[in-house]
Image (cartoon, rainbow, N blue to C red; front, side):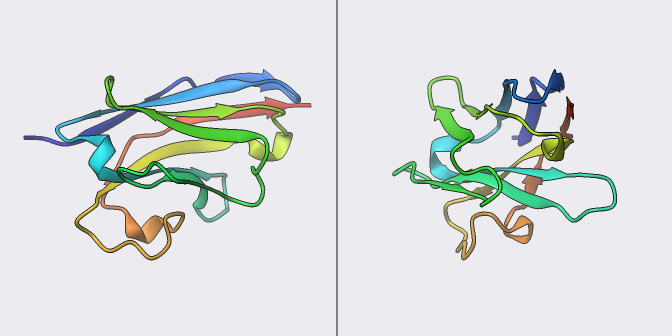
Length: 128
């Protein structure tokens, strides 16, 4: 079965505002996968934003978003979400959802190289 990730929810918002990103997975179960959000701004490397471990659902955050972003998953909808509050202009980037099976050994849940399935991305633009 084809495995796909489809992000949605991006858009333009003023600094201090909020957005919620969603990632709908198909062809596999997110509960049994490492899932994460990454972002990439023009001219910059892809950065780990937030991740969630399989089964236990333990969450991890990049230093730049701690206390502002919250990652969660809805197993019934097979959807990963990212609640983004107190947005800053430096949060402007393309945001990607990523997944890898729990059968893989993952050493750093926020490292892009750990993942083998990626969505197409959704743009977030924060203006001052």
